[in-house]
Length: 136
Image 1 (cartoon, rainbow, N blue to C red):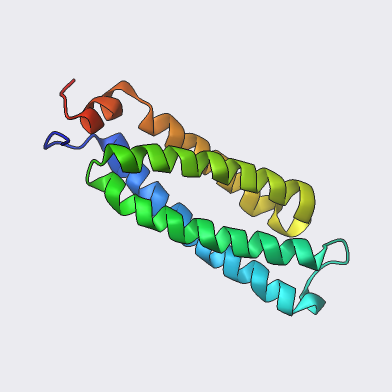
Image 2 (image 1 turned 180 degrees about the vertical axis):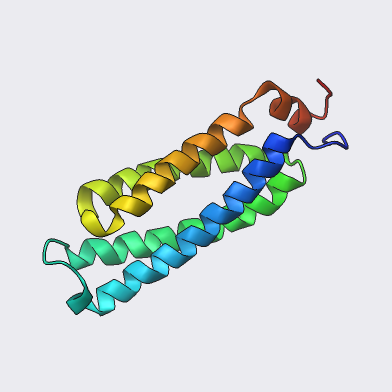
C-alpha cells in the first residue's frame, strides 16, 4: 500500500497516461476514418497499414486508460503495466513511422517523447518508494 502523500511526479504521470490514452483513442479513430475515406490520404500511404495501425492504436488506448486508474491509486502492478505499455507505445510509434509514414509522423513523435517522460518519472527514487509504500 502506498503512503498517503503521492509524489507530484506520480500525479503528473497519471495525468500524462490519461492524456496518452485519450490521444490514442482519437488518433486510432482518425486512422480508421482515413482507411474508409482514402480520398483524404496522400498517395504514399498504404491503406492496409493504416487500418492495422489505427486498430492497434485504439486497443492501446483502451488498455492505457485501464491501467491509468490503478496508477493513481499507487498500485505497483499498474506501475509495471504502465512502463510495459509505454515501451509498447514506443515500438508502435516506431512501426507507424516506418510503415505508415507522413500522416502519423507528428503523432508518433509525440508518442515517443511522452512515453519516455512517463517511464522516466515512474523510475525516480521518490516514485519507487511511494509505490513500495515507504517514505523517502
